[in-house]
Length: 477
Image (cartoon, rainbow, N blue to C red; front, top):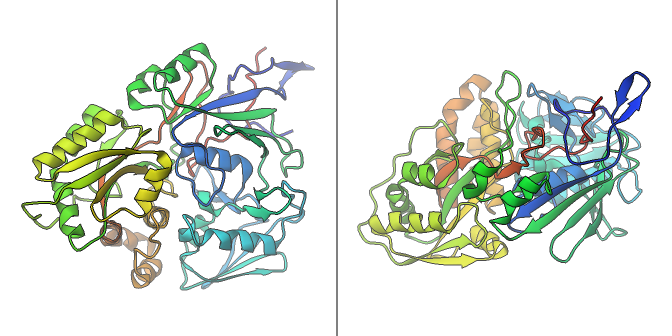
């Protein structure tokens, strides 16, 4: 039987507890229901844009390693720790791992899965890699230069093993749950994978269901009809407690935090417009009036860095479109307040609301006369380790379609630097990333995940997923 991994048992209105001899046994059965506000849950790890996506993907797919509570690397699909020799890293693969379509996971399939990530939002995982090839019993990564922190990238959300399957018609993994159905409205139904390497999970079903009513979220929580709510607007945040993101061990490792940003469209005026937008934003007021208490204003993509020095902007700016999502958690009033700040700074904008799908396209390729307001979730935990900060920058660049934002020469200098010297390199790397992407950071905040009041706190992983593999009914005597 799988050992429960949560510090507190989860009350999910599941089946009752079972007694066994003088002790208690964790029961099998029951259903976890989560509601998702915003775009449909994405099941492909090529684009894990928020906590709902990562939760579903963590149930379906698994990485070679994960990060433990003390920040250490723990094998998942790997058979042991990575074997590092200079710029060569060998990862032994467990034998006999079953995919959801019945095939055995081989080194060849694992290599193909990782290479499939290289062209999308997971490009940062293989950024330090010159060559990747399967070998007897595992995978061989040949790095462009020795980099001691490279194995941490193999524990990221975009480093899961997702193998294309002709039989299933989609990518399949080795996770504790497998996809049973996906509805026309975006509903996702997951059921236990009975051949999972650690045994079947306790729950009989996990359901992720979309909702479109901002006012309905708190009502569901009060009635006990939802265990978890993803993407609840901030105005409703006080009506249900926020999930706590973990602080893991002495390294203060925590789950990734969303970056609220404006992306400025390309063109000869991009640098001046970006500077003008940055100087016009009243970040403190915007965050205090329109975001939850956990949000922090930030003009940088990384917390803790000093405010950047921007060139003096031009006095006049062309009329721009301010593109926002119809389902943005920050809300319409927040977007209008941003518009007002820009107007006071001499930047005239027209608000344009688009679907989440169209916003994602605009964020990847903004037009020359567009500003795109969005939240982006990096693929790295928050920690004191400068390597995690670099990985966050690399993942943001990959997610926004510019994996080469940081030049290879700068990356190699970071790889070669002593761990204690790397922090001094981060301000310049952050500036390069921000300028290359045309980004104006506004705030750093936890992703919108809320928990129904009667449910014990659930643990979120450093990869930004709600861990469901060990969820079970609350056991009572």
